Amino acid sequence: MNKLTARQEQILGLIREAIENTGFPPTRAEIAQTLGFRSANAAEEHLQALARKGAIEITPGASRGIRLLERLAEGSRLARFGIGQMSLPHPDLAQFSLPLVGRVAAGSPILAQEHVTATYNVDPALFTARPDYLLKVRGMSMRDAGILDGDLLAVKKADSARDGQIVVARVDDEVTVKRFKRNGSAIELLPENPDFATIRVEPGQHEFALEGLAVGLLRAWG
Image (tube, rainbow, N blue to C red; front, top):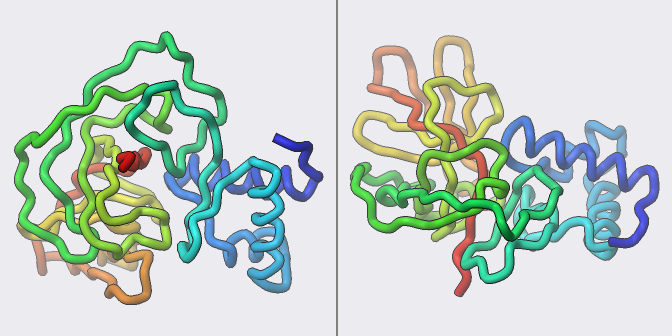
């Protein structure tokens, strides 16, 4: 990677911090607001410079489509997207197995089926925290967070979340992937695509449970 300017280092640090705190990178508007830029275009110019220098990869058309680049262990079947660690996975690290549980619909929720459809051997260094299972995403409601149809979301079991974290949530008998937000006594599940609506859960209106927190994303090759 080519040498970065002080401003580029600052933006790279901001991206890392956002990933560590919420599991996913910031938008251009968030970068601009944090650093006092007049517009998101200024943030975009810095991101393009970081991409040219090999520090990040940008997914076209996704407002959160920023990936911190690192090499994967040779021979891996899966590509890592949106994870905060910058250290290289050691080829001798022991892998562990993660079950792929059902299919979670992002944007068009489906009835959760808690059966394992596959098992993947993965390197634990790929994640911000050790996940408990993988869920296959269907739909594009989280597109601007860089979560696409067919991706495998790494999930750590949890029964609480902070505002801004991406979660797997169950509303009645349906499971969905969304960004978590408390609004007074209600919970809002926010999409990352303007074509989809927010899911609002009022107390006593629906059965609600948090199934887990997103701690990483795997994208199958081919």
